Length: 300
Image: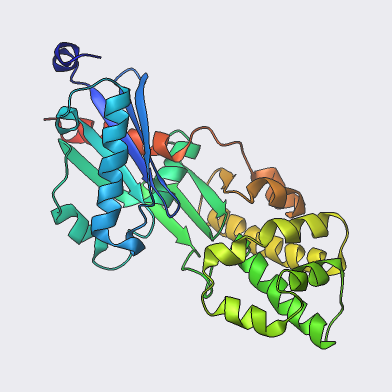
């Protein structure tokens, strides 16, 4: 799209999903046609507001470039931006006061746009099962949040939580205090069978590091390993609780999201599985929905 065409086409929107592993942006026109996409590095606000917003702008400019838009194109767009960690105290106010390249922008938590995208803007809830875990729903304009306060104090049933329990039980088994299985032996083998290597690893390990053990736990659980089954069964019960709580709060439908959503689903209780529905759109679609809604509410 050349500069002349851009000036004639003012109904452009941009949606951005900024998480802890990367940032994605997508530009669409008012008919919903995708014009360009862009990616950038991590944008979670725990990394710092300046770094977060720099990633948002970088992904957005990459999307504009792919769309063939002129350098100042973002200044004509309404943006919806979802960022991990924006719920921390004072963050939203600081971000709102920060300069941005868009015509206007609305910032929300990344769970918000994921929920909106999953249900195409209709009422519903999501339970995220990835490195962390959380429940979120929108019911008659009201937002409901359950869990998701961060590892290790929260995020039950998540990949990080699976990894933490695998480490704990592997150390117990290594001491002879608990059953040793193929799972516990494989976990200890990653540390050359030395508990103090585990301790040294723990001193610098993040939630993401713990979550790298989750596929190992799921594989052994699915193969019938008793320790793996115990860990995954307990995790599934935590996910069941998140789903049931959102339903109690009025969410008419629930979608399961995240890297562990598919492998965890067969372990969930039958009543919970019956309440799950397919995901209709991604988080960027949710951000674009917010941008369109903001444009209608505050036309320029």
